Amino acid sequence: MFTHIMIGSNDLERARTFYDATFHALDGAPGEVDARGRLIYLHEGGRLMITKPIDGNPATVANGATIGIVATSQRHVLAWHAAGIASGGISIESPPTARPNGSFVAYLRDPDGNKLTARTLPTK
Image 1 (tube, helix red, strand yellow):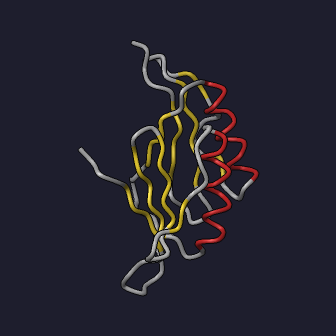
Image 2 (cartoon, rainbow, N blue to C red):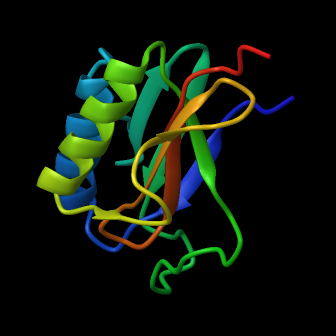
């Protein structure tokens, strides 16, 4: 359904440190910078793009929005969560945990305040 998710950042180098670490924890590649200066992460068929807002205004967080990233194992979720905290993210909601549908999930806010989750796919 989606071609990509684009989020804003007020500090692309800080964002790059955070996202390179969290994608590395998922066995993903570091971000690439395109001709427009946007960070692009490819993972499990999806694309996450991070940019300074093109209207010149500060980047702000979307209230109620969560970006979900597929992890292939509980180990990857835990590594993603730890890498995010070590790279300036904040653990939110519950600690990494199993859900009734069989998925394993963790939540973070990135250094710009965007809400993220890494989770394994449901087993039920």
